[in-house]
View 1 (cartoon, rainbow, N blue to C red):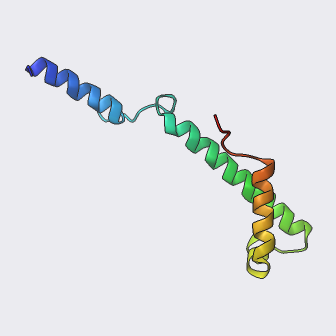
View 2 (cartoon, rainbow, N blue to C red):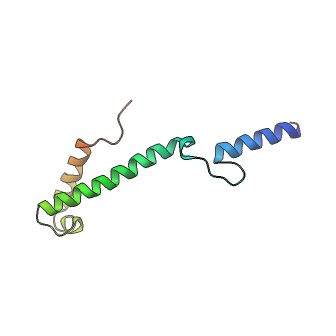
View 3 (cartoon, rainbow, N blue to C red):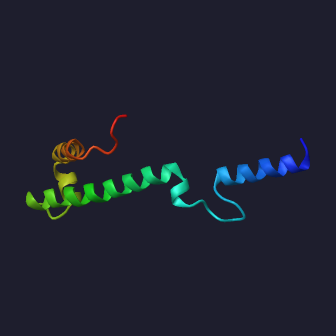
Length: 90
């Protein structure tokens, strides 16, 4: 392989691996970033919803609900996932 071809392959590898000249790839060029952002939003919304459910049931916090009634926590978390599927099957 010539030096020019090696440089071209190396530059393509840098771009594929996450950027060039020390710059990270933009969020729009990283396919996993859209999934990661969706998961982060889902986790935040789920925690907020679970905390509200705990408060409605008279618990001081979600941690208290989990500590005192883990089965209820599990049912509520399952209910969240039923109401808000994270990833749709293709």
